[in-house]
Image 1 (cartoon, rainbow, N blue to C red):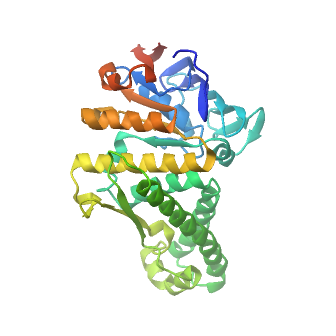
Image 2: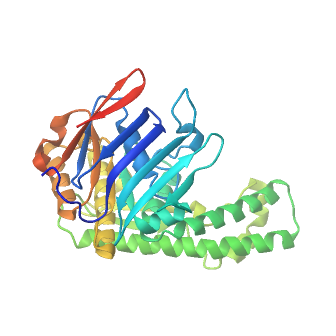
Image 3: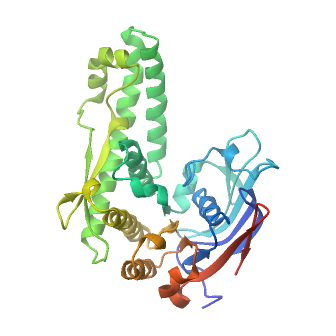
Length: 365
């Protein structure tokens, strides 16, 4: 199957320069799922992180641009990719010079990060998400917003507008400013952006519910609800809450306080009460549902980044996951410490081996 033509959304080449442990690397993909194999610390997850930065945001590690550059050189870093996108091929570059923010170029022209979301979709699942159902609500909001962003790239702009207005309002609260005129405009901005955020999140949850119900899968269905966004008129609710917010020094209501709740449907059990294995299976179920919904929208599955996912699944579920990925026709980049974790993929997968010498990663086929 080597040399097979790539169909659907896929990265065909990925070039890294001074990106974490990769001083220089060029990877060529043929469209099949990719098994990235190597010992811990070799630089496997760094490759996934590079691909995640071909989408809006700070990538799967949420790292600041200056923290990504290879040390000790600290010369800045660059990622280049040839991408078969939705209906067209693109050349994508993203980079950061020392002490500068991340820049993006698409087909030779400077672009916004939001524009990345319009030419491709990238979803990921990393071990840090394993605690999603038992950690604080912030992690679930971030997880939900990533899924929402995959359906609506403009969601990022609404979130940024809301957060900017909220930061300004919080500054007034901390300074004990009581003039209503100072608050009115900011609360109006928060209400407008907040309404869009909530609508986008609700629409994303509805898409995920449908995508789960329409599929027969080895991974359990999750019933999802959004809580903490009950204010019909957010501007009025914020005005009413000023005194309480001033005492707290921050805004206590709004979509930044929302939470996503999940129920293991077959057992009618809240996700936080499920076993560790069931919690992982619910996460995978949502990622697959997200991918199916996007495939229905664009006629092509998103790129999937699955870090150490195989190590946490039994043999049957591992095989079921690979079958789902192949049925979707998705280009999935998966990491693992042992090649045997990917045995059930057989010739359906491309394998890359990652090694590390003196702090520098090396890639071989």
